Image 1 (cartoon, one colour):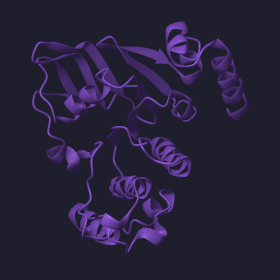
Image 2 (cartoon, one colour):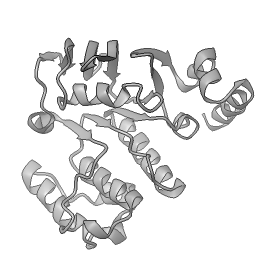
Image 3 (cartoon, helix red, strand yellow):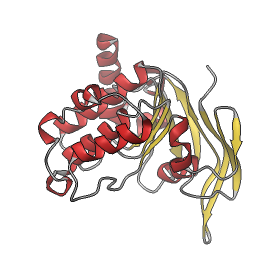
Length: 245
């Protein structure tokens, strides 16, 4: 299937350090892609370039078939693009309900009850965002994204520094979003947790990317397995995936 968003041959340097060389990222409709890599490997940099937060020294980003030389996610929001960065998005003194009201008015959308339910934030609607825990805040931020019904979502480290319960809710919400036809790309390094929800896995390492295929195919990639878990644990995970799917 044709990707909604594709970053091709991305090259990025920071001073004397080359971070990315010929890196590629694809966001495919109806697919949750897990962009996995160790801290500092360049995966978040690649996502930020795809979202227009950083300018690359080389390569091009295509969105819905058009080359975007200087993509800006704020401008693309009305065309179905959404970006969840690894930083706080919500105004601390406002409640989640107030943020959702703004989204509904700006985009002319119906009430976001489905987004609220999927993210499990019903009891958080009238709580000031400053009072939310890290996991609650991430679920609240995701609810504002889901309320927009995006065609493409890039989510940077949504599972970082949150407890297993919040992580499970977010994983299921992202997977549900992909089932609606949205192209979802999620970064992280929690391979064992996130690969269970992934339809496809891309590995960022040594400054470039490798598309490993499905979660089952990724667990058969010897370099990835050696670096993250070992053959025995990979076999156990593969058996779990076989039972689930």
